[in-house]
Image (cartoon, rainbow over all chains, first blue to last red):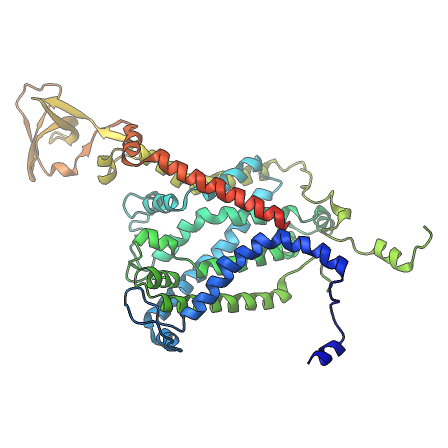
Length: 315
Length: 190
């Protein structure tokens, strides 16, 4: 063993005395992070993986034992899991495009050279981002209320006699939740703005000389140059939307009303952990979510080769 | 320094790196403004103002609701602004003033004296000693008269209801500690 590994050419030379002494301080400096990562991320993850093969339930004093794949069998046959996953996906189909595109549109607007007072607009569009989460949910709950909400007030003013009951109707709850999420566009907007500022102006000048209009410039310069930022936002958006459950938890107290339409996957996971106190099954659900997130992210990275343009990258 | 190779020359003439050092001056600069853009500026700024108004309107609503009375919030058909129904003192009682359409086609502001489902009696505030006026119809369909009345005492109520200084201290403690922790650990890593 030792001989064969020594015979193979090393791809990376072993640290010499000097290199090790140099690197040592690097490791000392990142030690707080490594300790934190091991203690608060890696260890709990391994622990939950171990949970999935056991029967930890804080409500029932069953003796702790290894149950093999029983939790995974329950997972496959549990209709509530797949229903809640469907709810999350239904919401994601609506929320993700809005969450990716709307901040982009607002950032384009704020970056336009035709906009006066863009600094002030930037501050004001970012402002709701700092509103405390629960306060924001309650403010929007009032705003979307069927009778006294201003949204329906405007709709009635525009001549719609029966505007939707946003938060009580199983069909309209998803658009309602997306509207509630609008106050979160500030973060994406800032990232897009930073990206837009990084596009060299000579590209725009060249496009102008070539006779490109506003739409052609957007299509052939802004969007390709912004593709890494858009990609980043999509990846984060996918991960976030899969974990979405806090708004329904605050809004509906985790009941899943109306008609089970807010039984999000993560809400079910949360209930398994903290309401039913079934740690093992909760951990199994968490690992399912992790697997789904991982698959989607990997797929996105695969697709990125075809549409994301990195300026520094050799093609 | 005469060791300029062909590679170096090629590097100099190569396509400029987009985020490289050579183009630092271009990064972040906006294209210069041109003449004839003022109409576009106006339209675009107007769109931004309208979008912003819709975007921030929930905040305005929450500010207005903060100074509304509980009665006004729970009732339907009240004004958008914080207001109380105007009342009229009659025999030691507070009677609400309503807009009453009378049979002769005129409308008058009358105080509701004895509410009932089918017909109610009203007092004319201008002539409180006159006999009560009987009006046919459901008084609930009538509009109240409102006066502007911000309820600033809502803030005092909240102050009594929760231990605000304590909660504020908790929040600040979390914010300060986590910011210090982030700064320390991140600068060490960087």
